[in-house]
Length: 110
Length: 112
Image (tube, rainbow over all chains, first blue to last red; front, side, top):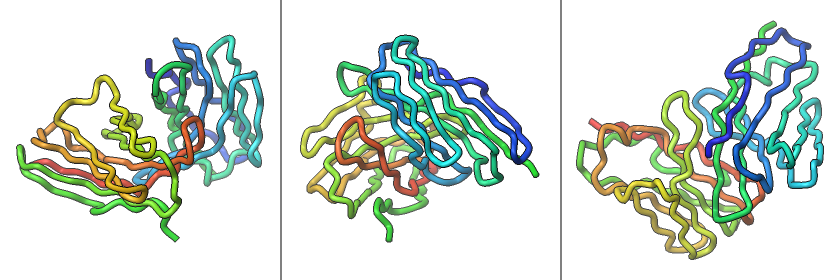
């Protein structure tokens, strides 16, 4: 039930782009994205609801394909501050099911 | 201003000795969550309260209990901590379900 993220880890140079994918085996109502820096709590980035929407947040955007039960997070022109572990969080249609994905460690180097 | 506060930030307890972690919020949010996060893993939802309604995840051990005496406070009780319960415990709040969650700084629990 835990969503699977890919890649597990990625290293970027400043200014490069990255895509993080989140895939669920269950039908999804919504997808959240969070970033967690080492030793800190997760910080909310954005939420996408069913309907295949795409959202943007500065240079970070995301898409949600409800039919494929997948979401992708796009980071463009990465900055050093983007480093951290990115988690998707998914909610299904039934019950109170919120699961964080397996996580993607992203490191941006100068 | 701190919005989700967790005390203490670090807690050491002995094997089998009950321990209580606390969380308070100034956001007046309806939902409060407790997560367990072990090293290099994703946070795992233990349970949540929607107002006074308690919702337990199916695989949360009975050793973990929670109380929410009012809107602002929520407690996590571990009745008999084992070595495997050593982890970071995160509290989060949200205005409702399916809405962004705001996390506290966490309490790191060590079991000796």
